[in-house]
Image: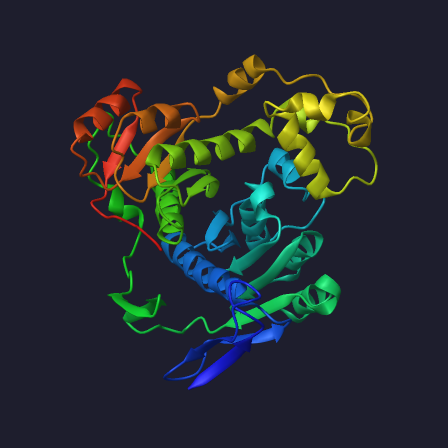
Length: 390
């Protein structure tokens, strides 16, 4: 048996704490720092996610994990100038892996603050330089270039958590966990998610282009490692809104939709042209933007307050202007880890530009859900597969 002693469990009072293998060696090596219990949960879940994204798309993948659910996930497609600006990577050299992480981190920057990073490929210097600028707890990857490792080891005063995982490791087919002294056992969820999963299109509109199938696959793989209930909005190879751990599916859809809306609103010229005071950190800029486009915008525009964030007082970004901009968001893909019980989820998804949907199906109200999709000329595929994760 091999083991790694941890400082404590989920909370400081939960001692002793360790991870171990009853048979064989641990598939990870700690190259720097001292990862904790939750760090390792995020790392191992995130690694599975990016490994499957890479397998499904043949592109490098990255995810930004927080509290055992992804805040963002993406594949390594090039970034537009606008995305480079809102992800704070203008002027940086970007490899495909660096693009993947910039997307994963940038989709929901508020939630990604203090993330645990998982990369599908060997971490290169371009990716390491992005990570070096952000607040993060650690990283897991199958390897690191010497330059990248040197950069990462300087984070957090030399205490940044860096884990290398054996990319050829295959876990046992049966997994166990304990709750209240009771051992649970189940077969691992080995479902292979790929673009062939979306052949059962149940709506009148059956036009499902290849790029939409890729986005739907990204959504479903992301959901496979997101605490349920969960839904995921995806656009152009990256998750733009993830709603995790809600008891009601409509609340998942609203939560993820609101995050997708914020991602899109950040690309409006009023937000792009905000003139921040010199020296204002990225996290403070994220917070200011979040308030600026929210119902609490008066809080950041109040006299004596805006001067701490901006050089000049921003114009109000009205709800009418926001709605007009949001109406330009189109062809978003939406995945759900279980069936939609009501058409209200579809109505909310429509407000965030959703065109393509994948869900298991099987609700007694499937007809109503399909009818709602048809009303908006959406394309919906039933997968027949539930993806609960706990």
